[in-house]
Image (cartoon, rainbow, N blue to C red; front, top):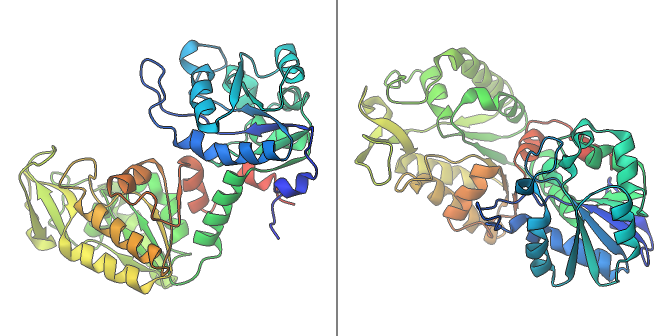
Length: 403
């Protein structure tokens, strides 16, 4: 039995009006065309299930950063048609999220329609977590379903206060996400391995400090690995050829000491790909650490020996949590290491040997680039919320729905 409230806990929904807090904060071009429908598509199953139970569904979301005032650029009206297409049902847009317009639109709703309300962030009260705003929001509905895990790390009105005003539960996407992350990090099959990339150690301190106490093996990659390599005594790395953070060397040593004390094996690069220019298909070569050129070349990926070492470790573990690419995956051929490790993890997952959970904006793009976005156990589209979960922090929008 789930420790969180789910749709089953709401009882009979026939004839009830259910408000669904989704995340429809999707990318758009300058003509307001949605360029990636992933978040819309992932909202559809919960909407369909609620409708199949006889509920009238009212969808709410934030969009962009309008900072408390309405503007056409941040209007959710642009999302109505793509949502209608994904759902296969008529979507009626209402240009407010509280007040008489919303109440009248709900009264006029037909059984096979969905209402989409205007951007929550047109009101400053949303970001302030205002309880009165939350009450206004849920006043015309009977139940509330929270399905926006990607905003669960923020104590906004629609994520926390609104949940307390009516019978409330996780939507299926939120449920799926929390279950996957619990399985990946809180209650994993061991051995558990994490891959963490990113350009700077300073931005992932909380994450690294939490992981070294929880995982059995930790691969540190991307630019942040340069600081750990330098701290580990690799003197060929300097500020001219890498992203080493000299002021973080002592911190890196402390993290490695904590890892050792917790029996966490840290895996660092043993060879690197260096390039003369920061551009696709630039002149490059693979070198061992002691042969990294002092200047004129930059570290942009890890080499085949490192790839083989990481893949060998993957063969030994039961669970993988991944956040951040191994190299500059946006430029070929410096996506090589990320691609090969991702493909190996995907093969193990498909063979039933590995539970693989990944998340964070760059990671999702990197795994799509590697062609494995549908071959991991779970890929989270939540950026900040996924990261804070990995850092071991409680997310307000999740905790509020504990039974």
